[in-house]
Length: 373
Image (tube, rainbow, N blue to C red; front, side):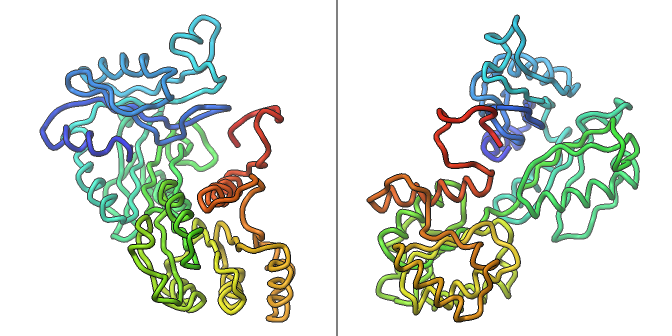
């Protein structure tokens, strides 16, 4: 929903009725992830995408119908011999798409959701997309971990409690997902499916070392959706004008800054750390902190093979264990043959993505099996 929110909000505020189609589950090589959305506007406009073009026509037709009737529907799109080139997915994937009517009556919470997303506050929206009792289809609940739980009940108190707990976990991970329960919220049951939009604040990318490579990494990190911080102890280099794509530029000793962010609760399992200084007086104390963090997504450090070996020796002298050192990606990045700062930034981003999704970094043309992990 996030990518179509401006248009959706504009129509919602003007009192219009639209249809919203959202990918709620994917199987095999589906082209768009859960949460991808498409709006069918009041005059039949199509905004956004649920499949990159494969089934947009079918979803648009269904959306036109639901925009008028108001009856939501969960539809599955996959490959069949008859419709693969029509409404099927030629890539071989399967999509479950939830299509619903949206206006100020059917989705009164949309303004609150949009405000929270704009402020960077965590908020989740749980919608019942399948249930044996049709009266519960389309019912939704807003979950805000920073505020007291609302009193409304979704299906039952047991279901409400389970959905709130699971939505909080999705918020922590920053993932949208469909959850399945029994009709009364039984965790080991089936029959009720609840799609959760988990709008978490953007994950953080901490770039240490105010060098030209850092500017390129900041640019790529911003493009990938990270909130980027560049930190360096040297004020002459750590300036906002040198890093226009960074959300913030901090002048502070790197290890002190990282320790302070940890104590403030601003480091989580989605945080990625790129150490580009390749200077032991900065690197070693910083990596002592970074490699002992309870949970981060990635820690990488730039440097030659000789720099890497020297750095490992210094870190071992500082007391780091082999298990802690194994968390370090050094030399940083994948082997792309990169030379320029921009090419190096791409190789670093590629390693971060591969680490996140379990990719091998090998050419897809040389592999078999499914593309998406």
